[in-house]
Amino acid sequence: MRLAVICDYPEENWPSMDLCSQMLVQHLQSECSDSLQTIKICPPFRQQFQQLPSLGQKRFAYNADRLLNRFWHYPRYLRPRVSEFDLFHLADHTYAQLVHLLPPERTGVFCHDIDAFRSLLEPEREPRPGWYKAMSQRILSGFKKAAVVFHTTTEVRKEIERYGLIEPSRLVQAPLGIASDFSLRSDHPSPKDQQILEQIGQGSFILHVGSCIPRKRIDVLLEVFGRLRETRPHLKLVKVSGQWTTSQQDQIERLELGQSIIYLQGLERTTIAELYRRASAVLLTSDGEGFGLPVIEALACGAIVAASDIPVLREVGGPAAVYCPPGDISAWVKTVEELLANPNSAPSLEIRQVQAQKYSWSAHAGIIADAYLRLSN
Image: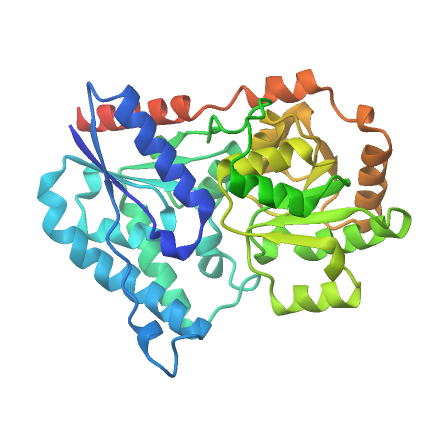
């Protein structure tokens, strides 16, 4: 059976989405080749609006190109290739508009969260303009047509069922995994890794890995870091990935944190793993997540993890992480200060490792392969 794994454009800069599709393709090809021939699909990203002199450097041009590529170029690339495959897997539910040109009875979609549909499901919570809702409706209607929908956690499933988006019989849970780079083992760093590690130096630092979108609550992260520096003036914050918003930049300036933050992008996984191993604590201040990959990656590297006390992160981190009420600055400061002062107050290294070992990309790929084989029968 020929399975097309339909991936995000890398130019959209969602490292977690790229990692998920990469790991799935890699493990399907290496472990399930006797039953599935897996082919990765991703057309070239075309820059059109960004080529215009008056718009090229503006975010509007970038977003316009994203929409054009998703809703025009990708379908035109995919349509003539449909007959080449028996089964289709969309690695990211926000590309579900593509289901409209695929045979839905042979198509699956991986749902990481339902944020893309929030403006339709909870318009009072997330008001959006009409064009955005129309786009979201197109994606959602494609999503609903898929024969199987994979999800990361039981919490994501509950939300899907709460809004009646997908029949429960079509839902399959496939937890994410941990790449082999994330472990206790620290290999000799590459020259690039070494330069980054030298930039950080030998002092203690707290680490955040992820985007800067609203649900990540970077405002909480920055406020907590600012409070911690009142008693630990040499403490640093290492921020990996994401793009500061204007309000976050203003907050950094107001709290006078600029000289104490090291902001890094486009890192190799080996470098991120070494940062996890060296961090005094890894913080996830989100008030909403679909899974929370940094939790298990950090635990696999032996890091101490402090996470928001929300159901998804409780499910993923289990007894291996320390939890704080979402948005409660004082509670976060108190908890992290205790972890910095007494690392032994965190769950033991053994507990952290046991929790991390529950997650495997091999198991993830196996679940998805089994679902498609059942679908083909």
